[in-house]
Length: 180
Image 1 (spheres, helix red, strand yellow):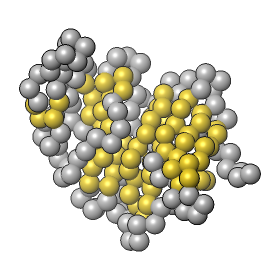
Image 2 (image 1 turned 60 degrees about the vertical axis):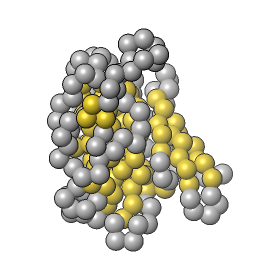
Image 3 (image 1 turned 60 degrees about the horizontal axis):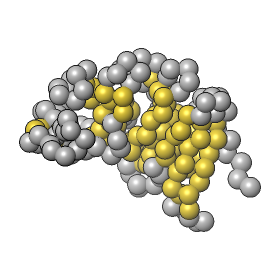
Image 4 (image 1 turned 180 degrees about the vertical axis):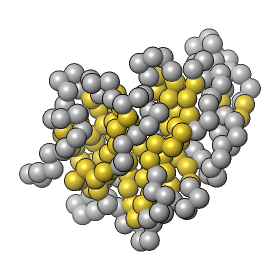
C-alpha cells in the first residue's frame, strides 16, 4: 500500500497516514517525487506491475492538494510483456508538454536497452508511444532549460561505469549521443 500524510505547519506535525486508495496494480510504488502541473494539479508518478508481468509507469492526480486522488492512469507500458518501462522521470517543457524518460530493460534477460522517451500534450492524461532515445542508461532524470534545451543525467552500469549527461536541442525529440 501507499500511504499519504500531510502537514499544514511546515512539517512540525503530520496527519495520521491514510491509504492512497485501492490501486488495481500489485506492488505499486512511488519512485520519484510528485510535482505540480501548471494548473496546480498534483501529479504523483507510480511504478506498477502489469498483468503481463512487467513493470510500467502510471500516475495518480489530485485536484485538491493531495487530499484525494483519482484512479491511476497508465503512462507507459508494454502490453506484450517484453519491455519494462519503469523509473519514469519527468520534465515540464517550455512548449507546455511533459517529457518522460524511462529506464527500459527486456523482460526475457533483464538487459538494459536504450532509455525510452514519451510525451504528453494534455498534462499527463495521455502519452505518446515510448520510443528509444539512442542512448543507454538506467534511471535518467531530465531537466528542461529556459533555452528550450533539455539535459538528462543517467547512471550507466556498463563498462566504463559512471554517470552520463545527454543533451537535446529539440525538446527531447532527439539526443546528442556522441561520446568524446
